[in-house]
Image 1 (cartoon, rainbow, N blue to C red):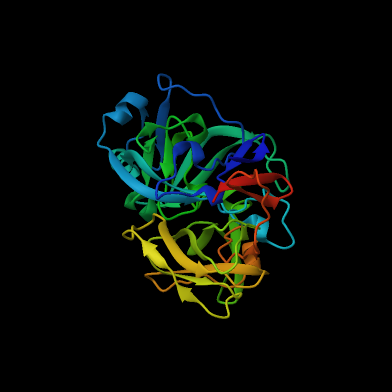
Image 2 (cartoon, helix red, strand yellow):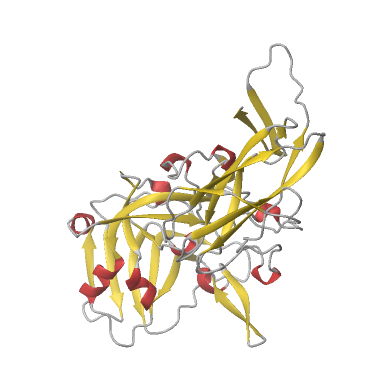
Length: 373
């Protein structure tokens, strides 16, 4: 894993190592805002309160006795791809790997809300984690705050899961043990980890991570409005070749990666080796699955002459949404779904007689990948 920050810990999957539909737990990206809390199942309690007819709390054992569901869902950090922005923002510079796809098992949030009995006026469901700390950059509240995000009532009832397992194993501390939310089709910011309180509200939630952070400008009727980040934007990423990888000339190379979207399925992925002047259709691998990423591949014949080539991938979903060419400046350091340029070098690789069969890729000044060839 690539360490983007040590305190709090933020880890990224080296995206060039992508090798399957399900991301193994130990290779799933980690995003934290505050120190990881150390919790145990015996003392754990999930509180449901606010605009509910019957507020109550659940122990971990009581949660496990409820009817469970397993779903497959892709989570992406809202800042994934930030390293491609120019100028680079003053924020964690994720490249391509702050995204993952996993099977999540848990209790539907709707079952818990039905037991509580939401009042007629209830409009939002606020999810609050145990993790807490002080925000460093202004504007900020004074003192420690908990990480919290809210969901509209309709979304909370539709498909949100209170997960206890990830890929068939209990959640690890870094991934939210003992309980986290999984909000399918939404950026990972909504999938609150270390979940301990559900607050039903009859008013829009204006918390720090709902308005100051994880928000963007949306222009409706000519008026810019600040909105919380919610649904994933359609996006394709190239896993191999990696950034700055050296490829031999006149060779058929398997370009491959993943694509995802929100509340729909990927229907087309296209590939370009000439900065989007022309596009060719890639092959989609496997059956489309709503709110889970789609693997794809393309057999590319590398140029005959040595050169630098910039590769692009572009996804389209069943609702007709296609990746844009450029990043929307109203999105700031978030929602980075434009076609990301992957520059590679085509030339005969230099080898020594004793060279091992591996490829060194200098992806940036901080790290080097050794990739099999």
